[in-house]
Figure 1 (spheres, rainbow, N blue to C red):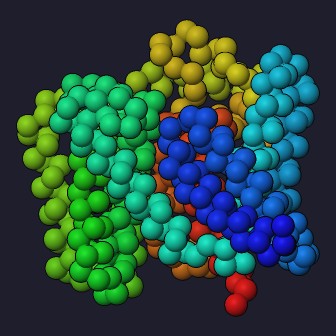
Figure 2 (tube, rainbow, N blue to C red):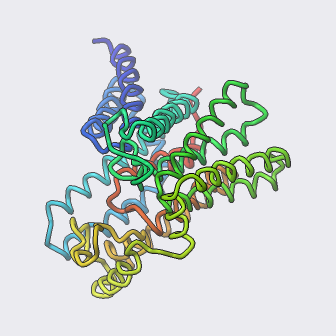
Length: 400
């Protein structure tokens, strides 16, 4: 087959697998695995059919020497921790492989294919919004009929909405991201959006807000409040948010929240738990984690498949605090490089002057202190891979 035909087919397959990857990130199914492998293979097909691709890919990599160094240092920390803790070696190396290919390699593939105009920013944003819209509507269906359409997961106002995901905290995080992104885009692009686009974004925001509140995920509520608060503060300082839009948005959020609060006793219960500082066993887990960290504070315990010391705590497998989790896994040595990487990301966001990215950054930091896993959470790490793409794409001069 002619090299141009191979390149064309590779681009088509790449776009297909990119959509598939985004669709299946929240579901943790085999299709997600197929998607990231497909992205890698179609990228290789493209590179082998375009003679300049390998040289240009090296040029792309040279723009991210700091990221490569820091990710390499984090991998080194994981390797050292694994070698020093021989238990569960198979699991250690499987997760290392996952880190390299599912997140690091995919991140650079996305950057390079974007640089080469294989896909556009509009394409990936519309894909993400369409997927989030489907997931948001699925939550409403679950609310109405007791199960979701995509995977027939059970959900109700009594137990919360998990959507098609494996638990309601994951769905809450997904809907917090959906509500924040749609809200921020509706305000940031208010003057340039067409009427249909405004209606779509505000509709997505309202649906996601309802799903978020009824997921009963308190950490996800904190994500939304933190991200939206930071975004609105800097929007006002930049003059993006006029008083009518500010008060209208605020009243809309309060109106939806108060209405649901008044009619849903389960939401009232979860909200009162938040106000009273009910920790859902976190105050039991965190002291245990600190004691374990002290035992191997320099290099950590490695990617332990089951956090053995948590067996005394009911219904938990994760520390549910990223700061403690990183210290437990790779010790102070690895924590230094994780922190360094966060600083690099933060500096790039400031350089981009993007307040949506700024709100997302701090929102994700807040939620990671109370829920989810930044070490072994494939959903969270895949979302962060996409976020990192949006942050660091600004370093690239795109091919014309």
